[in-house]
Image 1 (cartoon, one colour):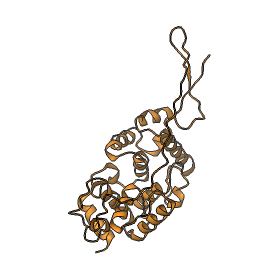
Image 2 (image 1 turned 60 degrees about the vertical axis):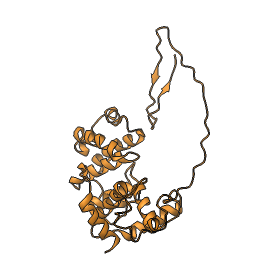
Image 3 (image 1 turned 180 degrees about the vertical axis):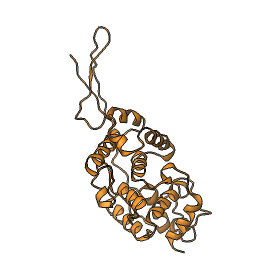
Image 4 (image 1 turned 90 degrees about the vertical axis):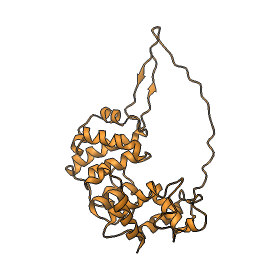
Length: 259
């Protein structure tokens, strides 16, 4: 049995019941993928449910006030993602009549959508054989195939993408991608993976060579130097100051202007 067949069989018996999996709706998949960037499913699920309840369609999100979108996003961080979400919803409504592009290349033209998100949407919703590569995919492929190329290098990104693309089930690309991500998230975990009853343990390079806890390889980042700043905040006699939000800012910063 091939890698993809084993994986999909496992997925059909073990997949979690997640709300965006109930339908192949590009809006629902896109929303879930943007929310889950840098966020675990356990945390992101409540945000997805709040968004889909408040803005059930891309039209609802497009006509929302940005401040309301940011308020609903509060707690997820990386507020540029929320701004891109809102901007892209407006773009799809105003320029595509509310219809998402149905190809990987078309999806890449949307603000805030990179290769991973475009691959997820195009494969799950439109059955385009585009492999996803995220942290879970890196981990599974590195362990099973014994790949030691650092995952945070350009060479690693190309190598893992090429391998994932080679392994994908072209008849069921969306299911394959979801299965691979699910397997990495719940079975081939970073710590304490379930190696003893793993469907790939007989062929897994890491398991058979004692490399489970050393793969995938990630090169160390440059050490961050701490810097310390002192700030003066001017207050009026009644202990008030003036805060002004600059509209051109894209990361949620607030500037302080004093009069």
